[in-house]
Length: 231
Image 1 (cartoon, rainbow, N blue to C red):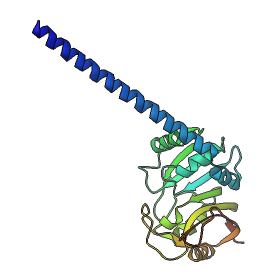
Image 2 (spheres, rainbow, N blue to C red; image 1 turned 30 degrees about the vertical axis):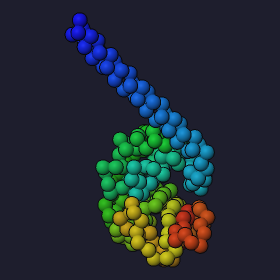
Image 3 (cartoon, one colour; image 1 turned 90 degrees about the vertical axis):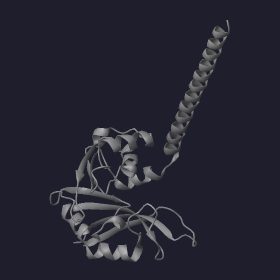
């Protein structure tokens, strides 16, 4: 009788543990779902990427080169607003610029994007490896400050851009010299240095849009540029 009682107690303890574990899993799944839903809501509310997408003026059937693509954080959100566009994703790091990482980014961004919209290419610190005059539109998001050989790379960007093409750049700048950002290999540029880099590379500024308002205390500014090859 005592043995049977001990077995019942053990059984009840195991049952309680299973119920607690099940409850924890249920709560965790619910919390994750709510978190994911919250991310979706925030993304749909945010007009930032919709504005960037409109500046790029993409249409169904267009192709866009995305240089310094990483895992697609920016371009996936832009692709959400541009179905039917083919994106050429180029980076020197093939371990993050690939279908697996982009599929994960699409899921995290809650973006309505066809994973087959992206094609992946590996460049070098001095060349994109694309053919001459291949693209009518090229996009570089928060990557120029990371280029190891900035002057050489900008000459290469000009090489792959068509004479009637447009280069779009989204970049952050330091207002004053400072240490590099925590997640960056190299520091942000000062805007005068960036403008000088583009001029020396043979690009002509079409327009500049200040993306975020910053106060005097802030040491960073964030802008969107449209360039064409200088005639």
